[in-house]
Length: 189
View 1 (cartoon, helix red, strand yellow):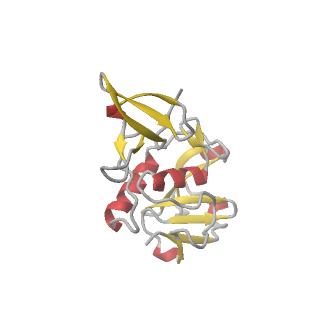
View 2: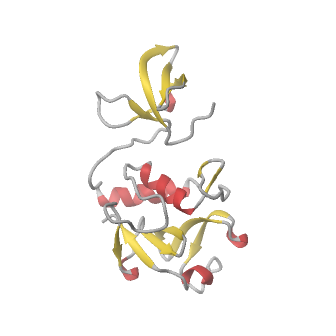
View 3: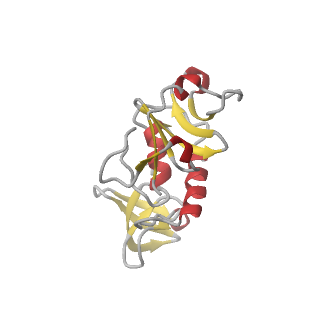
């Protein structure tokens, strides 16, 4: 079976020739190379993430390093095809892109294109957007990259899949259709 980046596994103590016996959260077991696993949480916890990124649970990460890391993580998905409700290499939608980018950097978000009370993102002004902040449209979400650029996953024929677009009218990758529909912006910080 295929285990995608961000999959949570229960790693047993059984290690054979560099492979750990692992169990999925619903009980199915298999073997994964220890080089494909990254520690999650602390030394006594056996939940691991099937990627090389640390998955840390913390109230608020270091702002500057988080902003850099979350935007770099989102860019790793460039070129992935759009797939409604997707969040894997088989296809990813807008909220899946944002959710996975944040989750792989230790922050769980509401997986939909809205700001929800009791979740870590709060509303900010458009003028206050910084890299890693979120832009909300009706039924759509994007991540701001800085310098007037944002990344999103879309079924739009001109920018199908995960692509970088611009908020600046003079840029060739400007999407007037989205710019005119910005509802709100949000930030973890």
